[in-house]
Amino acid sequence: MSPRRSRGRRLVLVAVAAVALVLAACSEVKNNGQNSLEPKGPKAQQIYDLFVPILIIAIVVGIAIIIATVFLAVKFRYKKGVNENPKQVHGNTRLEIGWTVIPALLLAIIAVPTVATIFDLAENPGPSALQVTVEGKQWWWQFSYPDAKVVTADEMVIPTGRDVFVKLTACDPKTGPTVTCNVIHSFWVPELAGKKDVVPGQTNTLTLNADKPGTYLGQCAEYCGLSHANMRFRVIAKSPADFQEWLSEQQQGPVNALYTTDADGKQVPAGPTQKLIVNTFACTNCHVFDDSSKAAYGPNLTHLASRSVFASGSFQLNRANLISWIMNAPSMIPMESQDCRLPPGPDVTCVGMPSFTENTPKGDPVMTRAQAETLADYLLSLK
Ligand code: CUA
Image (cartoon, rainbow, N blue to C red; front, side, top):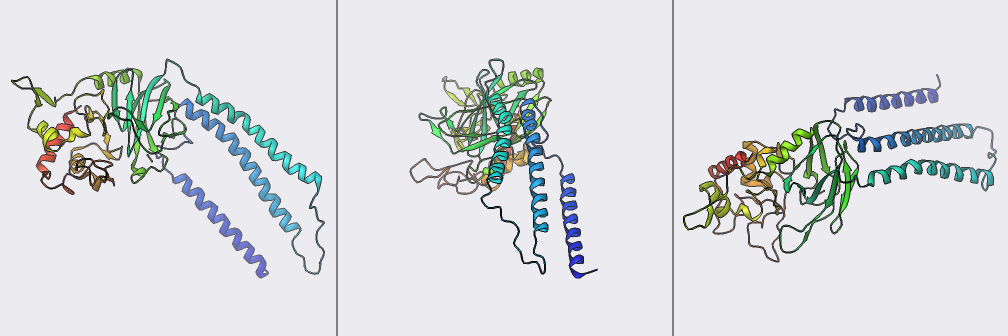
C-alpha cells in the first residue's frame, strides 16, 4: 500500500470515529426538561413542525454542497505532467443566474410557512385564555394573575389544555410612586413556546399551552447582569380542577398573620417572629407576607410554602436551604446587594437580597442562626 493511500485510510477512520463519538454523546443526553425538540404543547409543536422541514431542506442543501465541493476538488485537482488549467467559467451568465435563482426560490418557499407560523403564534388567543402578567426582575420572575388578583414568583401555575396569554414586561408600576424599569430579559420555556424578549418600556406577549400536567423548566435567555444564569423559573401545569383549587388557595389570607390589632386599636406585629420580620430585620421593606394580591420589590411570600422551589427556582424549598438563604443569600446566588441594608442614596447599589450576617451597617443587628431558624419555620408555615 502506498504511504499516501494509508494516510487517506487513517483519515477516514478518524472521521468515522469522530462521528460515532458525537452520535454516542447525543444518545446519552438525558431529557433535561428544556428540550425544544420535545414539544409538550400545541404552540411548541407548531414551532417544531416548522423547524423539521426546514432542517431537512438545510441538510439536503448542505450535503449537496459538500458532495459537489469534494467532487470538483478531486476532479480538477493538480495532476502530474498535466499543466493545463481547467476551463474557466468566470462570468458565465447561465451559472450566475442559476445560483442566484435557486437559493432565492428556496428562501421564498421556506418563507411561506415561516411567516404563516409567526402570525399564527402572535395572534391574541381571545377572552377564553388565562391572562398572566410576567415581570422580569434582577434576577427573578414575578407572575401576576390580574383576574384572580394573585401575585406569585418563581413558579407559574397554569391549567392544561388552555391557552395562557402572557404579557411580558420589565417595568414595575406597582412597587413605588414612580415606575421602575429593569434591564432586558428573555422569557423562555422551550417545551411550551418560543422565546420572547422582555423589554423595559414595552409590553410583549406570548401564548403558551401545555397538553399534560407536569413541570416545565424556564430560563431567562438574555444576559441581564450578574445572576442572569440563575434567573430560572418553572411552569407547573395542573388539570383545570387542580388549577382552580390552587388559585383559590392563593387568594386566601396568610395562614399565620403578620399583624394584629392591640388594645389601642393599633396595628402591631402579631408575635415575636413577626417582630423580627417587621422591626428587627425590616423584611417588609421588600417583601409582602400577608396579602397575595400585592406586588413588591421582592417576591410575594404570602404562600411561599406552597412552592417547591425558591430563589428564582435555583433551590429546593426546604428548611436547611431557607435558613442559609435568610442568613446570607448573596453567598448562594451572586447579587449586588452589599448596600441593601443601608438607607437608599445616590451612591447605594442595591440589587437583590442582602446578607444579614455580612455587610451589616453599624448599629444594625446581625442575624443569629436561631433567629434564621425561627424565620424559616414561620415562612414554611405559609402554605
Ligand atoms: Cu434576566 Cu437574564
